[in-house]
Length: 183
Image (cartoon, rainbow, N blue to C red; front, side):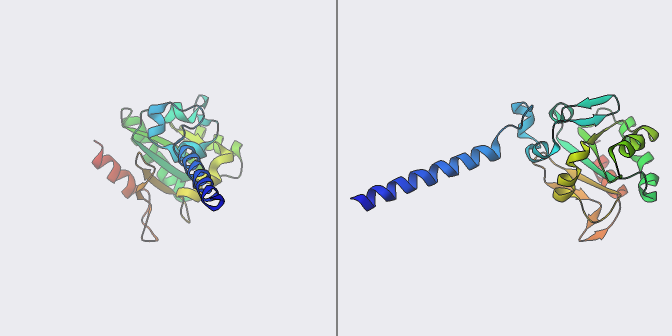
């Protein structure tokens, strides 16, 4: 009888632990609405408290709210290929204000100040990941080098990236594929 009671107790504890784990995985990140949390839950959990916008700071959930897609732009001002592609991305974002996408710069600059200068110098109309969170984002979706453009769907799965089969194909094909599928 005691063994039976202990077995039942162990099952109850295991069940509670599993339920808690599932609740944590589906929990709404701090500051996110229920509708936003259904999309980009993993990304929102890694972004930290703010994103840097051209006008200042904003909550990540407000910036991403209602957007089905996210383009993560891994870049740095010191990188010549990045500086060559950045005007293309800036122009595309400017010309497509109603696109169902949030664009986020994930900086590899040496400091937050350098990242802000890069955003200002290139008049980036999109936001940047909190400088302190860049490592977490890079670990989750970044590849070996920059520039790297990664298209995330609503479940934070990579739809297309600048690396295909481990080979660098560049950010242009990603932007073209996104634009073709999201006119």
